[in-house]
Every structure is written in C-alpha cells, then in structure tokens.
Length: 393
Image 1: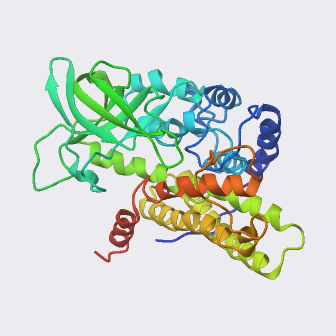
Image 2: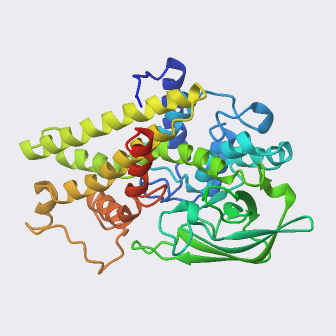
Image 3: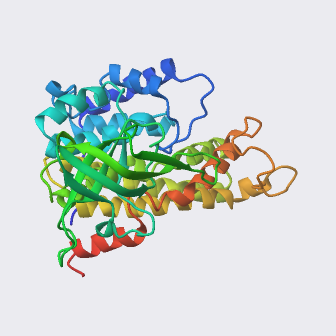
C-alpha cells in the first residue's frame, strides 16, 4: 500500500473559481451551510449542478457525463463540501450508484438511469446494511427468489440515507443458497422505492432529522432488467462500490465548517492555545487531503484502491469526530456567554438562527457526529480491510 504524491493539474484547479462563482450566485435562500454531505436535500440545487455538468463528471458523454478527469471531479466535490452546499439529493447516485452501473450495469440500465443522474433528477440510496446483522455485510438475509420475469424480494435494509425521498435503491440480496463461501450467492437489484411491496420507515436521529431509514420488502417484484451484472456477482460489485464511497474528501470534511468558524472566531491574532489547535487541525487536514488526492490519482489510472480508500475513511472519520470535540473543549468555546461553558442542552432548537455561527455549527456537528464512524463501514470493519490488505490477517 502506498500513497504517491499527486498534484492537481492546472485544468482541475481552474475549476475552483467557477464553482465559487456558481455558489455565490445560486446559494439557496435561507440555507445554513454545513459540510456534512448527508445534509441539505435540495433537488432544485442538484438540477442546477447537473446543468453545469458537475454531476457524473467522469462518465462518458454518451451517458450524459462530462468525460472529465477524477481530479476535476475532486475539485468540484471539495469546493461544494467546503462551502457546505446542499448536495444530499444527488450525492449517492453521483458518487457510487452511477459508477457501479457504468462498470457492471447493462447497456439498457446505463441508458435508463445515467442521463437522469447526470441532470440531477434521479436519486439513489444504498441497500447494504440490515437490521440485527451488525457490520457483517456478508450475513445479509434479504432474499430474492426467482419468479417468472424477475425476482421476488423479502427482507429489510437499514441506514438507507434519504430513501424516503429518493427514487431507487440498489439492494444487496441473497439469490443463491448459503455455502462455506459466505460471499457467494449474492446479487444486486435496482428496486423502485415507490414500488408495491416496499415500505420506507424514517428513523429520527439526535438532531431531529430523518435522513436515515429502514426499508422493508414484502413480496416486492423486481424485473430481470433491474438485475445489476450477473446473478452471484454481488460481492465483487459491492466491494468495488465501497471503494468509491470511502475515498472522497467527504470522509474528512464533514466537520470542516466547525474549523472554518473556529478560525474566524479566533481572529487574525489568536491566543497561543487557539493557534496551537488551529495548527494541529490544519496539519491533519492537509495530510488527509494529500492521501485522498492520491486515491483520486489511482482512480484516474483505472486502479481499484480498496485498501487505500479504507485507510482514508478510517483516519478521516477519526479526524472529523475529534475536530468538534477539541473545538468544544477549547478555552475560546468554553468562555461562552458571561464566562459559562457553551450550553448543549436541547432547551431550544439546536439549529436556531439565534446562535452565533461557531456555536450553531458546533451544535449541529456534535449531534450528527455519532454517525460519522458508522456510515460506509465501521472502524472495526475498515481496520479488518486494512489488515487483510497488509497481509496481517
């Protein structure tokens, strides 16, 4: 495993100014920025991004993409997250569902789904995790049985972000009998979230939102045309998909707005404690960014950096959970109002506009932070992937 030093090319860096101009002109009225990619479901904003060619950027033009480089996509992604733009609607479809269909999907599936995703009009959820199975993805129990013209699906998926608002979910299901090879007999199906036999149940989180859901399937019919790849190829496909999910800058920028507001609150002449914390956080952020850009370089070369992506996500999640805690405990924040610590009781709406920018952003991030090390693979799973990649287990 190695992370070669990679510099973003000039044509990629040139996009920064364009994205910033776009954000200044198209920022939704009244939207409070937060760098967590899971917040801010705004279809109108996604359609505007699609019109600029900033969704499906690396895909072939014949499928509605821009035929641009992974480096150019990286810059656009980084700028959107740093600004805290509302990108949740199209995020999963752009990041991993589209690339999965490009690699394993049929020609008909590419024609049907990819142009709509690239326009910012077609949204996908991830159907991997299940209730009562922990992080053991190979233990999925949702079954798809062969019937005339397709498959009959029964089971449930959980942590299906925005399933109550999205159009489709790509579900990992068992289509073959269990055997000694736990990875055999798995397949992926594209399921219409509005189809008969599909029930979506929102799960309220600490912040009061309902972005996570449980999706239950009861005799849900899925046509053969919606099988991704070949029957039994699901494990290879889903591990490839996880590489896209784990490697991007969203895996260390979810708490970035807290850092931005802390630097602003500290001012141009921070005291020694604030300066030391800014330096500590900035150095870690820069290191993670270089690693993530290196992964973008591997993707540009057609490689499959599964282990490297897992390491970026593991270290990045640790960082984005640590950042708000260090800021919260810093003397600058503990000063609070009239010398009191910043209150975190929920006697008022934690997202209320009456809060100062740093306190508002900090409260919001602290409430969402418990999910950072769960989505996309827990610490334990990621460390297992890394250990196997290094030959340690």
